[in-house]
Length: 136
Image (cartoon, rainbow, N blue to C red; front, side):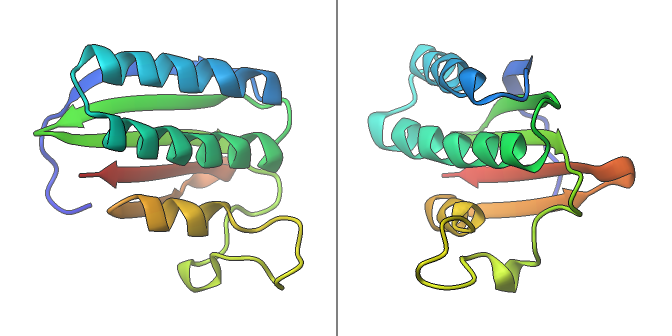
Protein backbone atom coordinates (compact mmCIF):
# COMPACT_ATOMS: atom_id res chain seq x y z
CA UNK A 1 0.00 0.00 0.00
CA UNK A 2 3.02 2.22 -0.26
CA UNK A 3 3.77 5.19 1.94
CA UNK A 4 1.67 5.50 5.10
CA UNK A 5 -0.34 8.72 5.15
CA UNK A 6 -2.80 9.84 7.79
CA UNK A 7 -6.36 8.99 6.80
CA UNK A 8 -9.70 10.12 8.13
CA UNK A 9 -11.23 7.12 9.91
CA UNK A 10 -15.00 7.34 9.52
CA UNK A 11 -15.96 3.89 10.85
CA UNK A 12 -14.18 1.47 13.16
CA UNK A 13 -16.53 -1.26 14.37
CA UNK A 14 -16.48 -4.89 15.39
CA UNK A 15 -19.20 -7.29 14.24
CA UNK A 16 -20.18 -10.76 15.41
CA UNK A 17 -18.83 -13.49 13.17
CA UNK A 18 -22.19 -14.52 11.75
CA UNK A 19 -23.84 -13.96 8.40
CA UNK A 20 -26.58 -12.02 10.21
CA UNK A 21 -24.13 -9.11 10.65
CA UNK A 22 -23.19 -8.72 6.99
CA UNK A 23 -26.15 -6.47 6.19
CA UNK A 24 -25.41 -4.24 9.19
CA UNK A 25 -21.76 -3.88 8.22
CA UNK A 26 -22.68 -2.92 4.66
CA UNK A 27 -25.35 -0.50 5.84
CA UNK A 28 -23.01 1.17 8.34
CA UNK A 29 -20.32 1.58 5.69
CA UNK A 30 -22.66 2.86 2.96
CA UNK A 31 -24.14 5.36 5.42
CA UNK A 32 -20.70 6.70 6.29
CA UNK A 33 -19.69 6.93 2.64
CA UNK A 34 -22.94 8.71 1.74
CA UNK A 35 -22.51 11.14 4.63
CA UNK A 36 -18.98 11.83 3.39
CA UNK A 37 -20.17 12.65 -0.13
CA UNK A 38 -18.66 9.60 -1.84
CA UNK A 39 -20.25 9.04 -5.27
CA UNK A 40 -22.46 6.14 -6.28
CA UNK A 41 -19.89 4.18 -8.29
CA UNK A 42 -17.21 4.21 -5.61
CA UNK A 43 -19.78 3.53 -2.89
CA UNK A 44 -21.24 0.57 -4.83
CA UNK A 45 -17.79 -0.95 -5.44
CA UNK A 46 -16.89 -0.50 -1.76
CA UNK A 47 -20.11 -2.23 -0.75
CA UNK A 48 -19.31 -5.24 -2.95
CA UNK A 49 -15.74 -5.40 -1.64
CA UNK A 50 -16.95 -5.32 1.95
CA UNK A 51 -19.53 -8.02 1.21
CA UNK A 52 -16.78 -10.33 -0.04
CA UNK A 53 -14.31 -9.56 2.73
CA UNK A 54 -16.83 -9.84 5.56
CA UNK A 55 -18.27 -13.06 4.08
CA UNK A 56 -14.76 -14.48 3.86
CA UNK A 57 -14.10 -13.53 7.50
CA UNK A 58 -17.28 -15.26 8.69
CA UNK A 59 -16.61 -18.33 6.56
CA UNK A 60 -12.97 -18.63 7.73
CA UNK A 61 -13.86 -18.58 11.44
CA UNK A 62 -17.60 -18.84 12.13
CA UNK A 63 -18.51 -17.17 15.40
CA UNK A 64 -15.27 -15.17 15.66
CA UNK A 65 -15.83 -11.42 15.42
CA UNK A 66 -14.41 -9.37 12.58
CA UNK A 67 -13.58 -5.67 12.51
CA UNK A 68 -14.26 -3.16 9.77
CA UNK A 69 -12.19 0.00 9.64
CA UNK A 70 -13.22 2.47 6.96
CA UNK A 71 -11.01 5.45 6.14
CA UNK A 72 -11.08 8.21 3.58
CA UNK A 73 -7.71 9.27 2.26
CA UNK A 74 -7.61 12.14 -0.25
CA UNK A 75 -10.69 10.83 -2.07
CA UNK A 76 -9.72 7.16 -1.77
CA UNK A 77 -11.83 4.70 0.19
CA UNK A 78 -9.73 2.41 2.36
CA UNK A 79 -11.43 -0.72 3.76
CA UNK A 80 -9.61 -2.82 6.31
CA UNK A 81 -11.22 -6.04 7.54
CA UNK A 82 -9.50 -7.83 10.40
CA UNK A 83 -10.52 -11.36 11.25
CA UNK A 84 -9.18 -14.64 12.52
CA UNK A 85 -8.81 -17.91 10.75
CA UNK A 86 -8.56 -21.51 11.78
CA UNK A 87 -7.47 -22.78 8.36
CA UNK A 88 -4.28 -20.85 7.64
CA UNK A 89 -5.84 -17.89 5.91
CA UNK A 90 -6.31 -16.97 2.29
CA UNK A 91 -4.16 -18.45 -0.46
CA UNK A 92 -1.32 -16.59 -2.12
CA UNK A 93 -2.33 -14.01 -4.73
CA UNK A 94 -1.68 -16.30 -7.70
CA UNK A 95 -4.31 -18.67 -6.30
CA UNK A 96 -7.07 -16.09 -5.78
CA UNK A 97 -9.82 -17.86 -7.64
CA UNK A 98 -11.79 -21.08 -7.57
CA UNK A 99 -10.00 -24.41 -7.83
CA UNK A 100 -12.23 -25.26 -10.80
CA UNK A 101 -14.94 -23.56 -12.84
CA UNK A 102 -17.64 -25.44 -10.94
CA UNK A 103 -16.20 -24.91 -7.44
CA UNK A 104 -18.88 -23.52 -5.10
CA UNK A 105 -16.40 -21.17 -3.33
CA UNK A 106 -13.04 -19.51 -3.83
CA UNK A 107 -13.89 -16.37 -5.78
CA UNK A 108 -13.94 -13.77 -2.98
CA UNK A 109 -10.43 -12.34 -3.18
CA UNK A 110 -10.46 -12.58 -6.96
CA UNK A 111 -13.59 -10.40 -7.00
CA UNK A 112 -12.07 -7.97 -4.47
CA UNK A 113 -8.92 -7.73 -6.60
CA UNK A 114 -11.02 -6.83 -9.66
CA UNK A 115 -13.09 -4.18 -7.83
CA UNK A 116 -10.34 -2.55 -5.77
CA UNK A 117 -7.34 -0.65 -7.05
CA UNK A 118 -5.02 -2.10 -4.40
CA UNK A 119 -5.39 -5.18 -2.19
CA UNK A 120 -3.04 -6.32 0.54
CA UNK A 121 -3.33 -9.39 2.76
CA UNK A 122 -1.37 -9.31 6.01
CA UNK A 123 -1.06 -12.57 7.92
CA UNK A 124 -0.28 -11.84 11.56
CA UNK A 125 0.52 -14.01 14.55
CA UNK A 126 -2.23 -16.07 16.11
CA UNK A 127 -4.23 -16.53 12.92
CA UNK A 128 -5.14 -12.86 12.53
CA UNK A 129 -5.71 -11.79 8.93
CA UNK A 130 -5.93 -8.15 7.86
CA UNK A 131 -7.14 -7.47 4.34
CA UNK A 132 -6.85 -3.89 3.13
CA UNK A 133 -8.53 -2.75 -0.07
CA UNK A 134 -8.09 0.73 -1.52
CA UNK A 135 -10.57 2.08 -4.05
CA UNK A 136 -9.86 5.24 -6.06
